[in-house]
Image: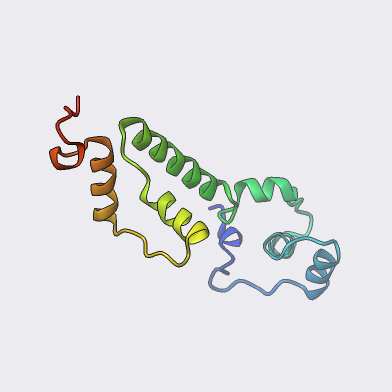
Length: 133
C-alpha cells in the first residue's frame, strides 16, 4: 500500500527517523519544512528513490493553497449570486464598517437586512403616497 503519511506531516507507527544529514542538506537548499521532511523520509525509506519536485509536491500535498483558493472562489460566487437577486453582503458591510467607520456600531445581521429591504421597497410611511412599483 502506498504510504502518503509524509504529506500530512505525521509519522506512521514504527517509522524510522530520517538521517540528520539529509534533513540538513534539504534545509540548506532553501526548501520549506514540509518538502524537506518529504525528501528526507523518501530517501530514508528507499535510498535510490527520486522524490517529486517541489512544485509537484506543493500541488499534490494536503497543505497546499488550492483548497483555500476554492473556498475564496465559492465565497465570491455566492456573493455575486446574492447581489444579483438583491441580497446585500453582510460580511462586506462589516469589513467596510471596520475599515471606514471604526467608531460607529454596525447593524446586526437582522437590522442590516431590514435596512436593505426598506431601501429597496420603501414603506408607505417613508415614501409618502408613492407606489413602490
